[in-house]
Amino acid sequence: MTVLVTGGLGYIGSHTAVELIQAGYRPVILDNLSNSREEVLDQIEKITETRPKLYIKDLVDFGDVMRVFEKENVEAVIHFAALKAVGESVSMPLEYYFNNMVGALNLLKAMKEFNVNKFVFSSSATVYGNPATNPILEDFPLSATNPYGSTKLMIEDVLRDTCEADSNLNVAILRYFNPIGAHKSGLIGEMPTGTPNNLMPYITKVATGELEYLEVFGADYDTHDGTGIRDYIHVVDLSDGHLKALEKLKTDPGLVTYNLGTGRGYSVLELVENFKKTTGVNIQYKIGKRRPGDATTCYANSDLAKRDLGWEAKYDIGEMCEDSWRWEQNSVMLDK
Image 1 (cartoon, one colour):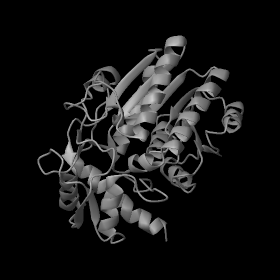
Image 2 (image 1 turned 135 degrees about the vertical axis):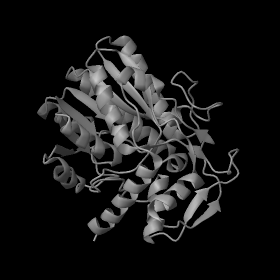
Image 3 (image 1 turned 90 degrees about the vertical axis):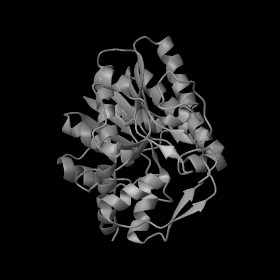
């Protein structure tokens, strides 16, 4: 089966491309390289001995999208490509709404044109806003505390409405929590082209000495140590969830929605301490102001994914830290 992977050179997309190849699928990657590097394709090939077809295109250009569908016999789509920084979305809302919404709509229009009816959507726990209780279930009320989360929620609404109108369309909405870690080979991992958006790259860059200290965004939250609590999930576990969702779509379920998380929340300072314990490297940090749009506590109940997909997270927090550190040390050498 040929699977179009948008944003397939990015952090989660590249790991999913590897898992797809190893499971016998043929991924075709569409990426505009806005927050990724073409060299990742070489790393995917080293791991899998297969080089996926790459189209350097932008989803906001409908002509570009159509040309990919015209050239490839796409049978399913996994959609990662999006702007994704919570803080940046607060200061650049128009850019986020335009890029994320237009890209998704163009993709769905092309799918309809070419009768492609399997779509896995990379959503986010941000659609739960600031949940009243934890762990979070799929039927919790939906809201958003920032423009990035709003784009994910709006695309979910589009998918719900589209599936209601088209009984042939099969969609898996995957609301995942906070991916960290890297492939065990150390050949691919999180490699943002600009300022990192996520916590772990900051921690690892402090560990290498590239950054002097980690800025912790707020220590006055209503948590045991004052710092925000998140459900950190290994990126390989997350990628496996996309393959399980793709298998589910082959049964024509219509629209299905799953949380992908570990069910265990760690505070920022707990993650720092686990990194230190696993690697032996001390992480200097300073407490800063809260970041706009951040929720206090957020961790998943993923029982539905376990029951329905046969999926559950396998990697623990120590392995996540260990793999992140291995990748950071390798990526420093790759940059030289």
